[in-house]
Image (cartoon, rainbow, N blue to C red; front, side, top):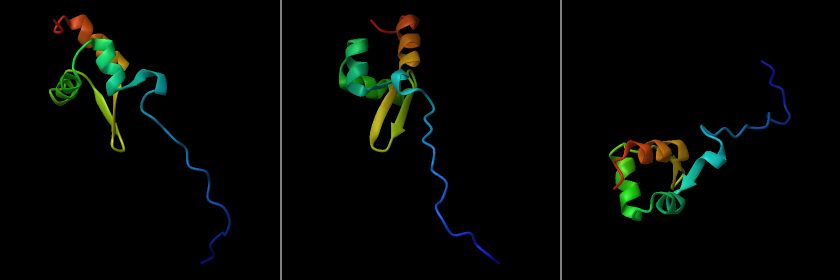
Length: 74
């Protein structure tokens, strides 16, 4: 069996959403006007969609817009 020696093909970085559509927890707090703990609870209760990137949590802006439009935020 012969193996080709050389460079491996470059790895592609793929995100499930464009970086502009993902907010940090701090940005989500400002956007919704709620406490940091509330953002984490909303992700846990699946009211908004969060994505773990390593140890960081990112929030989809579209899910924040849907949540705001639902009227559940008072």
